[in-house]
Amino acid sequence: MKKHYLYLSLLLVGIWSCNKKDDPTPNPQSNAVRDAIYSGMEEWYYWNKELPAKPNTSDFASNEEFLEAIKFKPLDRFSYLTTQEDFNNAFVGRNAGHGFGFAFDANERLFLTFVFDESPAGKDGWQRGWEILEVNGKPISEYKTSTGGYDFKLGGPDPGITNSFKFKLPDGTETTRSNTKAEYQSNSVLYQSVIDLSGKKVGYWVYNSFKATQGLSPTQSKEVENSMAYFESENITDLIIDLRYNGGGSVDVAEQILNSLIQLSNDYKVMYTNKLNSLKSDFNKTENFVKKGNLNLNKLVFITSRGSASASELVINCLDPYFDITLVGDNTYGKPVGSFPLSSYEPVLKENNVELVPITFSLSNANGKADYFDGFPADFLVGDTPQFNWGSENDLRLAAAIQVLENGNVNSRLVNTFYRPKWEMIDQFKGLQQEFPAY
Image (cartoon, rainbow, N blue to C red; front, top):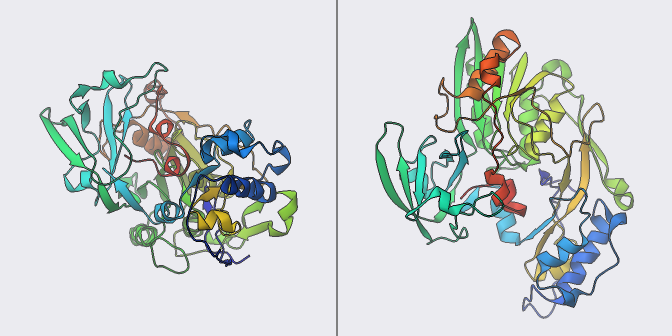
């Protein structure tokens, strides 16, 4: 298997070929497609021994319903279906929508959390810290569901959908903006800076998702390359990596980051080992570090939340055996397993533009740690403050990370700010969109 993409969902995308059928007319909801879904799961699913007997494919209203019926429910929250185009676009940041995220503060006020630069929202000047008072003329409270969550009814990601938002800006003024969804290229690096701290330089890096730059070979991120060069030029000794809204992405890019962060003394040591099901054990592989650049870091602090998943957790897990790592914020999501798409193995799926992305392997670090379905616990639980823009001294999680680097601890004032929102943006999304959550 020639490695081309490995990402979290986690993904290993190879170069394959298959013979085309004589009849190219797609029928994505056919019984033949569901037969191919089951066949792919029998062969590649990590929990293939837990698959139920094949149900009657005609008993289901959709492919999604069929997949849900055969998944290994105790652990599999992740396997999904999408189209091949959407799958490929997501991992290089080709999006459609408004281009923002939001979250509630401790008082259940709703704020923009991030805005992509080239998105419709970014081009309209929206920024983290703007409070959302109304959506399409209705107050936020009217979107609360009977389960305590929220459904803001913003529509799908299709270009052309317009929604209206009333904001309260940090200076107290209010503004109402109509915004129309469109296609755009998203950025992964939301903010970067260097903090002078007691005579040493600390990097602060807000990284939103592990997306590759289209056209680069091997698969890499130009944004990551530029950020690492910036931190090198500033001679930082410690780094705060903010992954609080990072749902995952390309493992090739995660490897690029890991190889940039690892110390030279740990070059060529084990990064991770992947394990497939018993039918595919020949594909089990150990990946070693190959040091990139000249960063020589002493300490790493990660800012995390339940929105930190997949490749975010992979980076933390792989570096943990080699660094003094501290997690500040909230516990991570819990996804120690990965996937690769199966349409290249199942011609019926490819011909009908159905991409099956089931869990196909687990990952362990150099110490063998591979079971963190409950997420990584934060060392210091600190509340989020989305009402403040990136880099603000009032951002409690950033302040806590700085305290860790100053004295190895976080004071009780910051710890006492912790709250766990009843609803988070990651709850609104499933499948591919959960890995790259944005409106």
